[in-house]
Image (cartoon, rainbow, N blue to C red):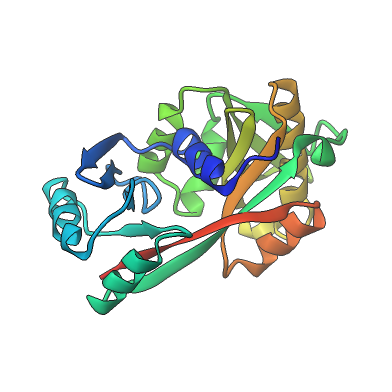
Length: 237
């Protein structure tokens, strides 16, 4: 059965997990410990009222985090209340999904390989793209099947990515291609490698989250037959 958008939000939480999930009334407050907005955002766990906003903001402050809310379809009232407080939309995100089988394809061994734990060169490639120790700690927290992918071009490291599986869905995160190796097929090879690994590890679907503004990446995913399957955005002061 094709995963719903709601199921994909659970996959995001499992394959890119916060350091802790705190329940505060009708809210789920993620403790990110510097791992970025996805693992630091607060979401509504059920019906919320305008008066509930202060408790969410206070809980985030108690964790030493700036207030950030993840807004999903169905959160229109919450979105409006935050807008009225001056909170701005940040980084609209699109979730993409495809059957794993649609992306499985043999690839030359020298183009992409899977490895865990990540090699030092992968850590350096991620660091070039702003993915540092706090985000590597997010990867380390994943409990299910996971791997890192290393792409090569002209016998040199070209890119890296992280992929993990939850409930039959493999989700790709932190895809980074070296600035000197872009538009040479590295992203496509890493997607194929991720699908091959996912199939070998029992996943039926492959997914990822990408900012709406990243037109190049979205064009790649669409060319691979992936379809839009959900969306969200953040609200920040």
